[in-house]
Image (cartoon, rainbow, N blue to C red; front, side, top):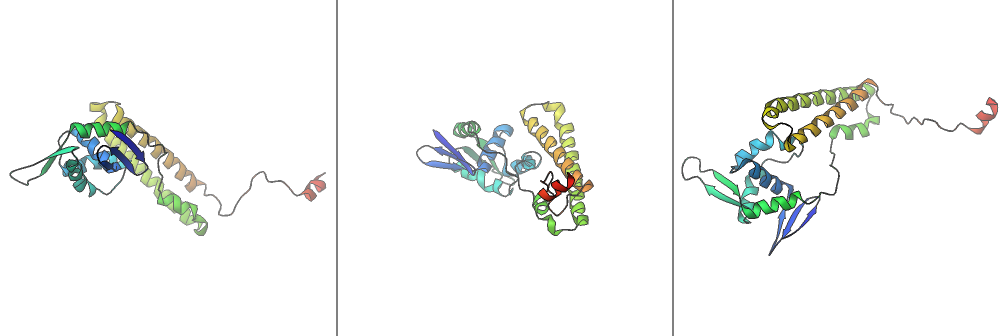
Amino acid sequence: MNQTMSNHGFSIAARDTLRLSPVSCLVLGLIGLRGPSTPYDLKKAVGRSVSYFWPFPHSQLYGEPERLAEAGLLTCKTEQIGRRRKLYRLTRKGAAALKQWLRTSPGELFEMRDMAVLQLFFSEFMSEADLVALANNQVRLARERLLTYAQIERKYMPRMGRNRRMASLSLGVRMANVYLEFWDEIARRPPPAEAVVENAKKPRGSLRRAR
């Protein structure tokens, strides 16, 4: 099979081109890690792991496994009693697709979408007090996120050590610390609304008078 990847997804070319979105690959990866899973199992797993660096509507986790099963990447077994939950397993074709995706570089840096940074960009229309309030709120959120990361680390580090999955947590901690430092500086030393040009050339007349 051949494969292509863009910013929005991943394609497997066989008899028919199968389009895999990032959520498709996420579903394959989680089932590969967890083993047989229901959509609700996937939702819980995403909430305590992937959602911290790849947010998306969790409702997609209920429709995407069925689509992947129709394509032969997963198998589906419905319980005969009780809640009749659907249990999905990774097939050999699904495992191959997952490995293809992992071997294909995204070819891009991460996408940053931060409402507070967007507000900062237009903060010339804010008072300094409002800007400081915005910054302090982001500092609070960053500290809360760091506490959450610390809880995750305490829970999983003894069992998992510093393996590859925990490396993504390390990146999250570093980014949250940088984010906290940035907004803390904004709060303590708010930048001026007007342009301040440093090391600007002095008018020639002033140079003559200085001589």
